[in-house]
Length: 308
Image 1 (cartoon, one colour):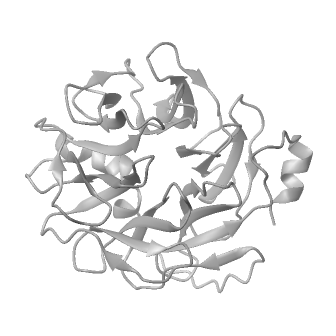
Image 2: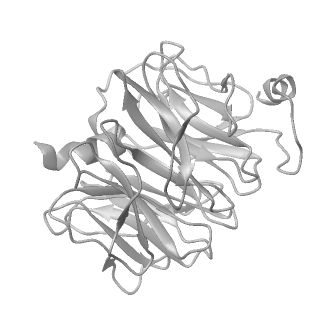
Image 3: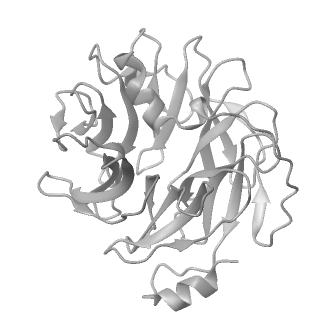
């Protein structure tokens, strides 16, 4: 039972209850990139913004896929009989790190973004490792693991283990995301039956809680300038994408569809947020256009006016 725990926390789509709600979604500023009856998840922009990696069940099991940022040229990067999930680009765009069950356990792998040669295994623990996130320098990979009782955030060299545990305590930590300058890691953790967003130094130390609302706040994603963090939340009564200042404060809701919107990822230029939505009756990838200059310092009133 415990072996699959970390995968259920990281891979929210794989365990979602699929209630079909057909909403045609003609909201301005939102465009659909994938359109398949199989489940798509985990969009991750390439560092130059030209491509998106994601994972999909459309080949019969979970594989890592690639496409142009326009949604064109969709093709699988992996084709292993086991499940491959949660891709994350290296800072130079040459490699993809991902989680896979190809050894019978959840481990972290890395492979060229071209798909050749085959993947190299980075972790080999008998417990489950998932949610990999590459550091901006390319030297480290953060990941979540249930090697501990609560499930915690670890970091390891990009070449592989040994891993260093960052979070500790009864609340654990999942879905790590490096800040653009590499000094901090955002993650989500359970506390008092709520899941919230936290930030801690990437070298370890005390964590600071950013969100505090009944229910679920999870899967943080930093804006390219490091001032904002997008996340998925149930605080409106429905799973939507929200944004909070990296310093804390009142979050702003940026999607409001009656269906689920989850797994946000910011484009490198800050102009768009890719996310997964069930608004078509299937889990597909969408892009929300935002008029956000990464060089500007914005008030919350201005930020609210920018999302459309």
